[in-house]
Length: 472
Image (cartoon, rainbow, N blue to C red):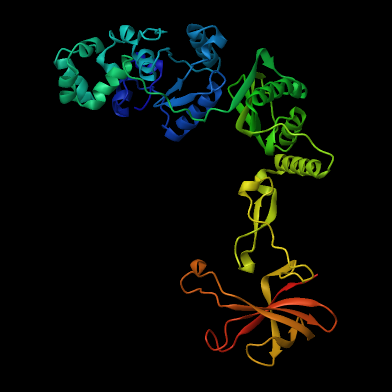
């Protein structure tokens, strides 16, 4: 038996009992297969729901949650009022539980699971924890049996004994657990989500149902958050609107900007685009209890003024366009071409985030010398197209070539530009050959970029020719 409800416990059943023994005591026992993964998913959903009380929520296995209420309890009228509110809210979702408030996570867990104290004032954890049974240590069974046989039945009995002797007999972990429950040592929780840079929220006395007026709620929240960022000299790059429904469901809409921003209407427009692009539309259900707006990532944003030149405004228009496209289609789908640090023409261009900051962008495209034609064509074939050629010498430029059943007579040729493969990228048995590139112009004025693959005699006895690109 992995878990029991209250009726089963009242019948005298216990965890760990075999199913045969349980059925012998209760023949009509209803049994369901345990699903640890489903239990974990449920706890994660409850943890997300509890983020409306505090952003610092962690799982407390096997079936508990740990909430760090530091700086949040006063919003609910104090520690006792917050505890009552949390339990009442969970009961509304048909979950029953026990809760305690203490200065350390281990003390709160022990009081909630094994005690009757609701709130232990800061610094007084030991007073309320001393009467607890040694089962609050949750030590291995053999340790609990040994402590009981030694006449140590409460945590107070252990606390009065020499820590060195107890450590030597029962190990460091047992004594560390004891000192944390007594409040002598603190260990902070690790929340499931990192704390946002800035967070504002609005709570409703009655569940909020009017989805058409949701922007009227978000606008002042965004304005408040951007006001906080302005005082810090920062602007937001990543934002999240979080909606806590009365039935326990939590919806989150995240969006980003290409540059730090504090523009309320622009952020509201991005939220609108993100909401419109959802495959599963935002549904208030029985209503939202809390709506929260978070700034997940912020960067320095200095005050700037657009001058008489248009360039600054154009940059702003481009960034706004990228943000709107990313909000609708996803940032991973809004890309641009950028130069890549390599001499290999097959790798000279790469897709990068269109909103990447200048420091993370690859170097710009190289420019030809004044009056010189471009070294690379605008149009490249992938893969290069094979062609039939005729050259005066094996390592010279072609006199003519045939491509797509059309013969081109060469009027001018320039090259070769020898490009060796990047040896560190060549897999074993798949080594690429050296390429000699030529810029060709036929008698009709069409210009081509061709290459011969493989050095004559040193790499191959029969080099092959390919058309790699077309010049404009």
